[in-house]
Amino acid sequence: MMKLHTLILGTIILLQSTSIWAMGKKETLPPVESVKSVDLNRYIGKWYEIARLPQFFEKDCVGVTAEYSLRTDGKVDVKNTCRKKSCDAQANSAQGTARVMDSETNSKLKVSFFWPFEGDYWILDLDPNYQYAVVGSPDRKTFWILSRTPTLPKTFVDAIVSQFQKQGFELSQLERTQSCE
Image (tube, rainbow, N blue to C red; front, side, top):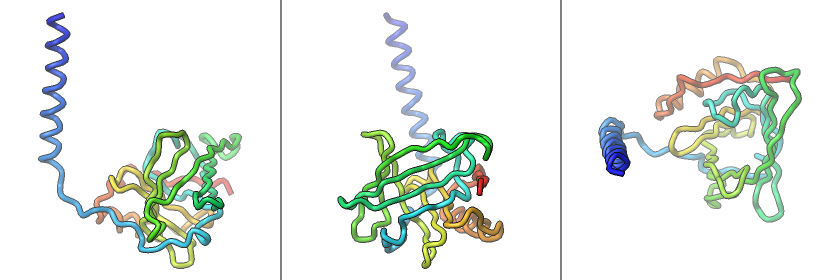
């Protein structure tokens, strides 16, 4: 019994000291900002994933698309589709729902594929003609480049990556994803 108490106390001390060390190591970054305005009627439709930070739920996914449709209650239906490892693989889809968190801009949403769990979906950059979008989270742990077309020029993607690295996104692990179209 005494060993268990010692183990628990040791673990608590280790976690607290790690947290204090990590707080001291963090550089101060300005808060992540979303775009000023999104017309959800223009945003709905099909988007192709061009690049992403690795996420467990997209492991080995290629040919990823996201399709959004506006519901009558103001929420957005989300259908994400991917193929595992190869464009020849069967397509798998996940259905979710997004809700607008900031109705003044429509650029901050919460997405859920499995209630009650939600993730931040902030639109960080958006082409005026709604041809590409950059989506991420305020903690900088998620990041996607989306396009209305299956590909974007490498130099264009490189410029987006550079812009967001300057804003504190750690994009060294960015995966440029393969289109299957």
